[in-house]
Image (tube, rainbow, N blue to C red; front, side, top):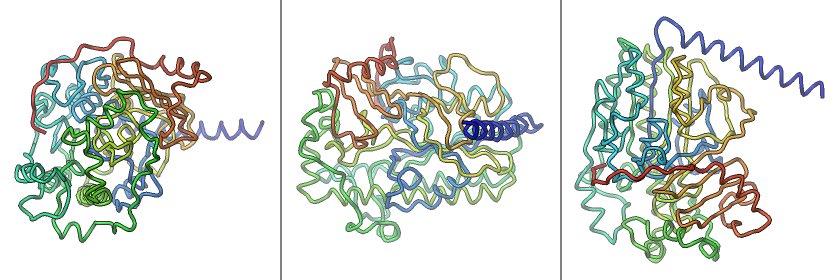
Amino acid sequence: MFSRIKLFLVLICTVSVFLTGLEAFAKQSQKPNILFIAIDDLNDMVPILDEKAVVTTPNLSKLAKRSTVFKNAFTSSTLCNPSRFSLLTGLNPSSTGVYLNTTNSLLVENEYLNIMTYLKKFGYKTIGVGKIFHGTQNQESAWDIYHGYEKNRLATKKSHNIWPRNWGVVKEKFLDLRDRLVTDKALEYVSEEFDQPTFLAIGFHNPHLPWFYTKEIYDKYAIPLSKIERPEEPDYILSDLPDSAKTFAIQYNAFDQSNYHEKVINQGEWKKAIQAYLVGVSYMDEKLGVLLEAFYASPNAENTIVILWSDHGYHLGEKHHWNKHALWEKTTHVPLMFSFPGQKAVENQCVVSLLDVFPTIIDALNLPKLDHLEGQSLLQIMFTENAIWDNHALTTMDYKNHSVRGICWRYTKYKDGSEELYDKKFDPNEFFNLAEYKSLKRVKKRLRGFLPEDNHKALPEEVFEH
């Protein structure tokens, strides 16, 4: 008992010393900068989250060696617009009414503070490059300077001309050049010393569909098909799901084709699709490496917090699903890293949410807290791998469809009242829906307590470019 108490006190003292250093860092005469890196559609098939991952991401791994990697981070929505809007405002979709990519979040541009507009109040220059908000729903008021880039319309047109198969080797004219342009522009900012406290946000588009890459890129990054494993697919995979879940699994597939999964299998494309997605991951990682190399060689590195995150994951055939519109692990589980100057690698196992990013930034910069934010600061658990934090992450997909993820359970309730329940310790792939087991009624009742009592009416919809 004494040795346990002694160990606990040592841990507390160690963390306290580091936090004291952080307070001094935040209070220094020159306010800390933030390098804020967003990645589109990056799921957990990367070495920083899965030791069995086959994809090559050396630059994500290098950053992880000087970061806290949150191994159990979850998004608050599994679509680009609501996820990004939620992270940037610190509010759940159920609190704002921003549920879909087509939800017009610009209607509430001045109603909710976001990270950038808040930091501008304290003398920060805010610079955005690439995708931070969702496409043309970018909030201009958030930025002092912003650079956005249009997608390659030839690639979009090509993706609609083949059955539709959204992956493969293409000529240069079909390659989406946005990440190349984003990286080039970002280098102009990270290489020179910031002239005032700066929030620099960089948004990479890969590995978002379409997964079209040139032969040169494929030759460099494509993993041999023999080394790629298809997701496990038991015969009963959809049999114990409620109709609402089956709708997410099948009807919300790419291009809304209910038989999309069967097409992928029948055409022999499953492994090829995974291969193409992972090519996109490595291609993004290459651009990330160029950015980080320039950043760490710059005068800004010693006074900058680096934050990297993905807006949501992506299904590659799990539960017959080929998209993100879902509430299972593969869509909700995301990379999240914080890197403070001089920090060493920490792997944190606590369940956290992307909602926690905004309050953590406020805490790290020692700025006045915002009581309306629905996340929590992660600073107190940031620097110890054995932190104990009884937290649950909420994910929402469209109006009144919610999933709660704790360290042991995932509970999902759809707007029609149907449910899913998974034991994450014994069923990490979520094969067995236990919602109908009477012996687990108390578990469900406890987890229902984390669902929002009120659900904001959905805001009007409009078609936006992304």
